[in-house]
Image 1 (cartoon, rainbow, N blue to C red):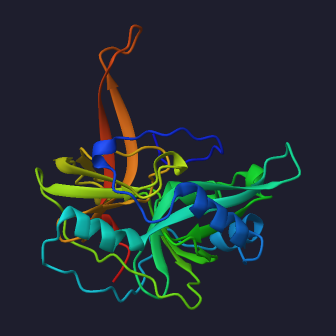
Image 2 (image 1 turned 180 degrees about the vertical axis):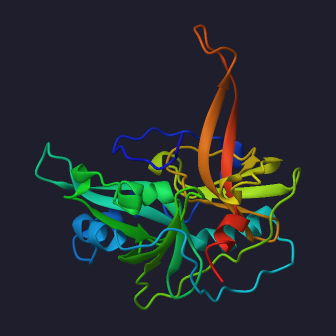
Length: 288
């Protein structure tokens, strides 16, 4: 299951032991975003479709990334520092049932550079035309990126993507705001401690969860299909969220969940959930 949220109806899924409170209350943050959507430039889906159709899949791009720190952080330090580099992928849309426009948080994204280079999953943007697939029901919508302070940024362009790797690198206009990038780390080994920050269901914003790397899959024929599996908690809306090492470096991004049941037929009892992560080497394969 891919994990971008597309419904404007959301339900909380909270593990209180793993939540660090953000400075802004959810309702206050959303109200700030909604107010800005009325006065801020956003990216129209039809224009996005036109621009995105010109992007070449898996084309490598030149990027100057920040250095990766080697000093270990406490979980609290890591969350405080890296949550500022975690973004919300939102939409401003007409539901067709009333006269109002609505705001929804659909997925998660990551800041790569101070000047607005960002990262999310391929499937987050897939319905807007990546790879030639377009959901025409979305043409009346606008898409935007928002940060933890509720600032809204228009998407300027998608620079490259990989459907197989489930990665999309794009550029936003940060205006006069200095963004906080998350440095790239190295591939995480099995049993390594990792941390996730994301937006489950589009409402549990900046949800923190700690876990370990449970497995690393390999694919000799196509390394872009390789995935890392972790025990961190996340859900729909978490797509594109960072998986971090103890130094706060990016080692992967949230991609999928896959439930395992006792049987393929009723009665079906859930036994465990496999949580698939795009490893950082897939991101590095698209940049130089």
